[in-house]
Image (cartoon, rainbow, N blue to C red; front, side, top):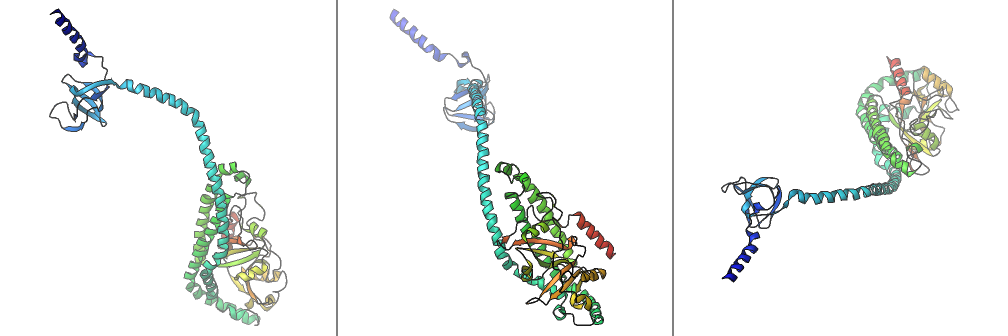
Length: 460
């Protein structure tokens, strides 16, 4: 009997921890608990409340508190829910689980702080490498594009040059009949007066053709070629201050060049091209050629002060030598004629010729001065009689050709708003000639505005 009593006492001692209620243990909430059976999760703390889900045995739930009614309030899928506390086994307080993570995070932040600097350096190095490769690729692409434009632009534009010639001859269809001046002064004067009247209906008829040519050459052609200049300036800047000296400064100034050339000057180019399109629709203009040297072409067309100091002759037309049909700036309606005068470069322009004197219908003594160097008398007579341009058939040449001379006997810049370069071709290298910084904005210049106001005031 004594032995049986001792055995029973030992069994009770061993079973005691198993029967101690959970509430007797030290529990802190909110806490993590483990489910001891498949457990229903409900919207409220009673048996008939709607069921949200059933979680399997061994699931880990975050318990906020356990009520006296035997239900536990939990956080389930980001919202408050309830389940029976009877099937939960206490695991650990939530704070106890978060503390090691926070401490681990703080230690990680210390290590990341030590590596963040090198991460930034590595990222910068990667970006610089990409930019260096991209720069070389773009230089090659721009070089190929320059040759492509030179080779294929004439082919693509051939129909529009035909339309340009058609506009010229439709406006004055009598041109082939009055190449040479063989009539008396009285007959020439009478013809000039009659033809001035005939120009009125012809002007109206040719208006749609003027508009088509203006849109193509002013907007499509000029903007495309100027975009090439601006892209070259962004990728291969001419100015050392804008990144032409070293790659590091090139990288730093890249956003500045993009904003300056592509955004600002590109926007101004498009605006002035649209304005000149409207002007050319009503004020007749032709696409003409001017042959010169590469250095002179750059000086004439370059935007003054854009990538260097403002030069006296930058963006300005000046009278050259020869001048067999008067002192002024010469243009040719045919490319072959301009090539005869070219020394490596060809400037393609839109020219508002204004009131034009057909030298084949001028007074004989004026016509007879043509063919000799510096025919200043032709220029003076033309300006005194309100002619802006002289049109001359040069018959002493081997095949003969037409030339336009925009009169400028003072040897100053010609009316700049009348001459707008579209693009420049480098004949020796057979590519588009680069104009550093892009071509001058002929619309947004003080002297252009003064010329326009002077021109308008004299007409009123």
